[in-house]
Length: 377
Image 1 (spheres, one colour):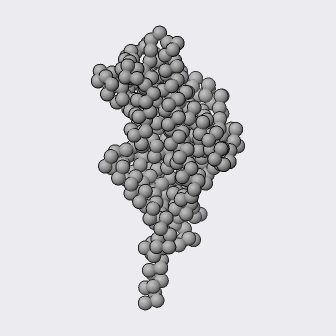
Image 2: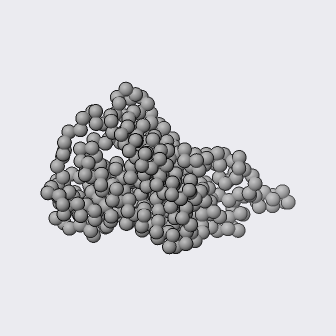
Image 3: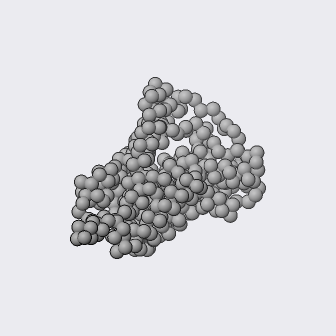
């Protein structure tokens, strides 16, 4: 009976009774899994994160080498790719190999919308400082406004590693909730007439030479401006160069499929597992979730508002909905822009134009992360 009693005390059932916070986090993990499977909210992100949350919150005795924060545990080694920024860099390599810049290069003025949408980052930076976060913590929280999960994780790993779980969950949660968050803001800030504006199919034909030169020129321009963005934009533009070169199709296909999928699995799973209740459930986490919602909303509103300002000076008006795709949530925000436009006018096709804004948003958020890193270190 004594051995049986010791066995019972070593089980998770016994340990969870002493700290119900683990049950709260397990419920959150189950909710994420439900949203990804039943509602199909960003399943590639939410499913690994949700299951990781469940695994990370099964209670155990400390010192067994099981937890993600214990040295020499398997989860700790997998988490190494998060804390060093390895997984985000690999994800950016795959994103570059998947991105087609033709639409963006044929409509260069739309790149301004990708820059405008980054205003959410700087507004949130000031808000986080006002709420008492340190400058480095505020920088990590602010990048949520870019709506780019890998970038948020990368910057937080460099500036405030203790906030990785909270920042990552907030960033990916709001990315998954794009269909709920963005459409009301878009409709609030635009009129029915503006939402019905049609965009020309092609402003100009983009040559193969332009597509080949762009990743090289983009690397030089962006990385000279913000050298700290090299770990993200370097792999991103390299992946794109492999895609457009046409001479390494096998490498480009691998980068855009197997490699990015593997990195996404480990990134989502370990980030989820890092939300261990005794590390995650703190007042700071609630503040981060609040600031994340503000950041995402401001970023969406900034893009739409800037598009309306541009129309004051343009002879050919652009659809202001495109500004909402300036955040770098690829391709979720572009899809929502297209759907909101089609609800106003079923013949309106905005997807390719929105993807141009989306692609510039990815670059913009990475540059902002590099600038914040260089200033906060």
